[in-house]
Length: 365
Image (cartoon, rainbow, N blue to C red; front, side, top):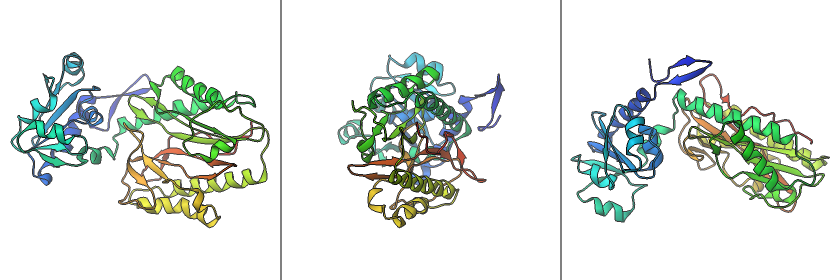
């Protein structure tokens, strides 16, 4: 069985995570020589999980150049580590970094995770290495994409159930709580992040925190939310209308929908991140709303809600195959409201795979 294959059981894929984690550590080991280290001390929690499967507030893993590895954690997690982390040496250690760093002659450390004080306590001369595991995490294996696909399906289903209940008089907070509780009822671990529900003039604030404002007839309502499933984050935004739609609202919605479509179509292995951003941003700028679209077009998603790569005018680098990423243009008019439409997709050689499948037609409730 290869890394990207699994056993089909009762309609779902059961992945051999031992093989997958070993493959990830081997990929990391292959990069060590480029940084003149013989091992990498990984202390950032999300990266430890990626390489070993262990979820912990105090763990580290040392990956050597031959792809062998040692994981250290304290008494609270040691039994879980021994059960979850098959195929890897596990030791009990309170000072996880201090215990592991002595096991290599020229260890590298995660410079973006370790404080100066913690670095000094390690002793010796570890080499700072920046973002090496994050680089590996950009391209997802199929087990990760399946988890994201499930998270996005739960997000779609929760939206379908909740949007049917939205009516004048409901508050933003009530809608947000309904979305979050419905995702969990459907099988999510929890919400992937604090939901955004912004109605009427509050829609001009991209990350508005839900308030006690009641929905009014004639409002646009923007909902940005997602489910967390097996550690992977869905991210979707839809804007709906309540009761009636004015001319300016319809014009703004149609513009953002066209810009979002252009951004999705630009996603492809080899495409520059700034080029994808420009495909959507250009339409908004040409329509005279460029100053009202202040954030980037999108971001990678996975074990973190926001991870590489980022789509923006200052973006650098090119997309690869199997990169989950959002496309989320928006236009925000102070004092009036706004529109944002967002999907989570995966880059594929034959065209992007859409994971959030809720309609992008303007729903008038």
